[in-house]
Structures are given as C-alpha cells and as structure tokens.
Length: 208
Image 1: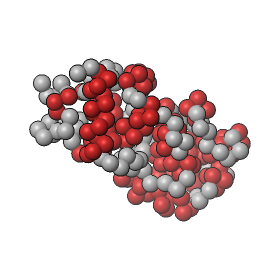
Image 2: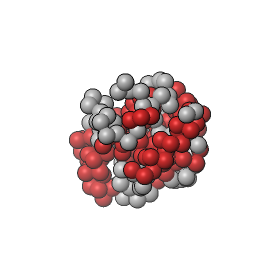
Image 3: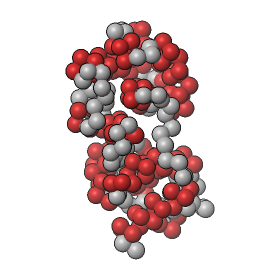
Image 4: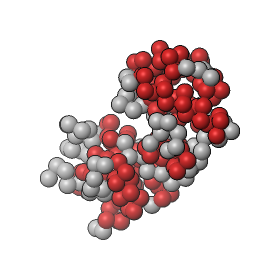
C-alpha cells in the first residue's frame, strides 16, 4: 500500500468511526471561537466550555471586549490557567480587530497570526471552521497520532503542519484534524493507547 493509499484508508475509517467532524469548543460567532481557542491553550476544551457562557454574557460583543481591561476579563477565565496572558491577548486581539479589521475576523492565516496570542494552530482552526478553507490544526493529538501513523515525522507544530499538507487531500484536511482529536481522546492516548481493537492498528507501526 502506498502512502497515498494509506492516507485515504485512514481517512475512510475515521469517517466511519466519527461521522461528525466538528470542533468541540462551543461558540456562536467567529470572535467567540477565536477567544475560546486562545483560552484552550494548555487547558481542556471541556473547561473552556464550562466558563465561556459567563464570559460571553459579561462581554457579549467584540466592542465589549475591546473596551475592557485585562483585569476585568481575568476573573472570568481564571480557571483556564495562564489567565494574565490570556486576558491580555483577548483584549488586545479584540482591539486590533476593531481598529484594523473593521470588526471582521480575517480569513487568512497570514493576517490571523498578526493578532495578539494567535498562532498557526488557532489561525488554521478559524480558517477551516469559519471560512471552510483547507486547514491543518496541529494540536498535541494531531502531532502525536500522525507521527505514530508515519504521516508526519516531527513534533514541531509548523513542520508537522507542512508535512501533513503534502499528504492530506485539501478537501479532507480540516475534518481529518477534528476526527483525529476525537480518536486521540477515545483510543490513541498519549501514555496508554488502546492498541488492541484500534481501527487503525494494521496501518500503524507504533505498537510494533
């Protein structure tokens, strides 16, 4: 089986196992997704989903965040960890969106990474989920599993993203990343992967 054939088979099996390819973060608009993704750094999506309703009730619009101070945001995101930096970035990105982008979240990775606290992982998520462009979100699950499957050979997010873009069909890449996260949580864990019964076992060299 060629690498291309193996990739297509992996995609096929993940589609069957996880028919719904969707982001686990809960949001109502692009700005909320941007903020939730910043909060999710070194924090679980479940924790972000637990605290975000109160945050967005207090600051319902981009303008509300833009005129806030980091100190006003901090109490609402304290339990997400690193709240000082995250609050500073959230206020800063909203101010920049308001002042330089007319309140519109950019649709390219090149523009998104200019925002405070936004790296390529966040930018790819926005581009893929909001604007439905091909994207590769190289979070810890994606990096770990694609290296185990020999689709990538680097733990550096930027390098891994570049490698995956060469092997994943563009029209499948966004959904592939969502499904690989679900697969990572259910089966291919970091310390104790459930190799027995894994749907990708015969395509993976990790157990061997």
